[in-house]
Length: 418
Image (tube, rainbow, N blue to C red; front, side, top):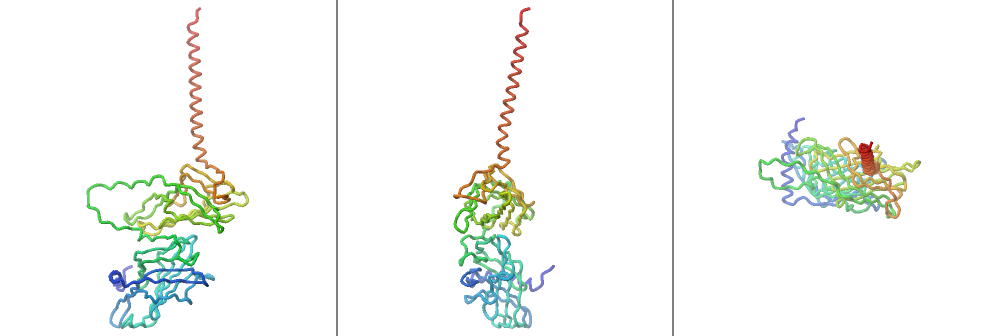
């Protein structure tokens, strides 16, 4: 579908206004909090530039403005979410203008589901010669802001969201919803734009670029989850490698990428229960979530779910993969599961997880130590192979020795005196 004249004007002029205001330093940061009693559930530190196209008596005009220092949270419209209603952050400013963000939670992640902008055309200082009056409301459901629960979304780079005949550009943003405390979490989920670095273009050559180098074996990390009393309730030691197929922006086709999880750059979180436990590993724009389930009748546990959410700079859209019907890493309560051999855990066709030197115990951890391990079948097979080979070699030596003795006996019989 073709662009309307209004949208073409917006596409052409919005970047110019944004660049000019950035150079002049006209955008300023504001801090907004939604509270329920003495608890903060949503907090945002951000700068926002609004670009709006409106009609005048003769043609169309454009106006840009940033959120002023006087911007405040509308307590009547904002909410931490209750009775089936999503959490809302509504900021009001100027003469009847408002900017709202609604949130939702999906498993271990939260996201901004809608951006709503309300602007009052009766404000003649902001909209001179407007041929309309009253409040105009525009909504965008394509926001692209998400992060794991208990982490702060951070994006210093400008991010533009279009809604109707308007555009909102956020910058220097730090935001969190469903907050566990009254301040932003120290663990951060960084947007893809902040992960991209700009370098000078290379000098053209005729050399063919080499194929990407495989990442090699990942480093082994030790991860733990504690309960409300501070006691370790889940232990894991493993090297992890992501095998992801996604559409590449640079190559405009589906590519397969092997990415090692770096334990030194990983933030660990999770939860423990009597029949369910989770381990969440967050590394910048990648979050890997393990769910373990316990059968209280058989006292057997297993890895029942894996969820991956990634927003790498080369992806055309955030990658999400989930499977909650898995049956991996099965062991018994009171024991850990161990598999030193490399395993491949298939999650969905576009995502599998390679594990190395793995030992995990999601239930029944005592004294912050692994219990005696139940070894995987792959490790047992690895132990059997040298035994079988040794037995075969011993049998072969025995056969050769018997054949030699029989042959020697026959040769002596041929020299007997008649």
